[in-house]
Image 1: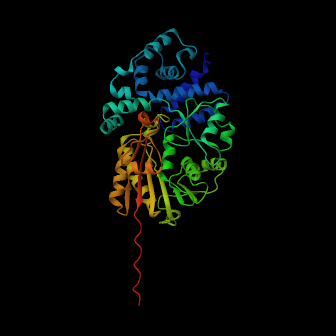
Image 2: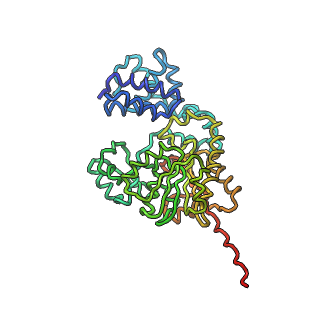
Image 3: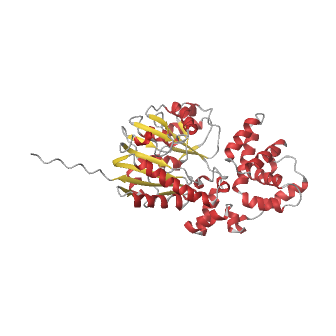
Length: 430
């Protein structure tokens, strides 16, 4: 069934704004849809998917659009994106020339393209990844990053179990499969509207990538402990930790953004958790942080990062950043990790994590921490995975999840343990 002609015009208008790269693509799309309430669900889906198709394939699509004879480049970008997203037969009002041109583009064998063009990423990023992973592995990684991610859910064990959710989703009907590594994860091939489902409204399920679920699990939070989610954001991992603690102990959700923390509140209400305490802080050395120094059993630092591991979901990220931003991010991450480490008590654990693929944000930050904090020692990830009974992941010192290998977003994690504090010597008895 063909889409109405105004869908192409709408997609062109919003793409033009997004391609300025002054704001995240999802934010711009959200504002556009709010200002165009008459667009139906199918039309919105086609516009959004075509925009993301262009962002994933920007290098190749731009090359082809600029090489096309006649017509505006932005129009041709939208045609390529829409054809990729919904198929050429759904496109309305094409001229004969446009139709023929589009068919020719879709027949191109991309495996024959220049490697950086095939990877569809800025040259600086492609070169950096080749240096880390080698050319062949980088191309496999790029292919995965340029494929839309599935929809992962986390089952709230406080309310139900995975088998019950699979059965209830099947009545919708929505097909869900267990994730291979996270014990409470489910993977949906399609992306249905979940917000109206009783399972979602009751807090029995949350949207959360399997990799993110694993980050919460490797922290190993236990009943009755004092735990801090240091960069909580909208609280996906906070909710997972709270359920892991069986709603006992005390779980602090710290973040420098009140706006992000406000998004946690409705999710918290649905979850049924009462052990979570959201706290807005000014920075990693805030007095609210200092008051808890040396008192916390476990601290998770899912640090602000480039987000290069999330390109399946946020393909605009690779075009909105440059190489200089990565060096700045490294300094920020080192400082945040240093601030969070002060919370950890003797024998307690600290997890540093990012959703980045880049060594500067990952291995280099972990190595710097070990070199400058002799009171902590690295706990090999292989040992942590065994402790948490997470099977099937072959890791060394660090957790390194890659989309083409593990079908998750790209994640990194390192686990540190504070050495037990030396007990003060007893005074000589008289």
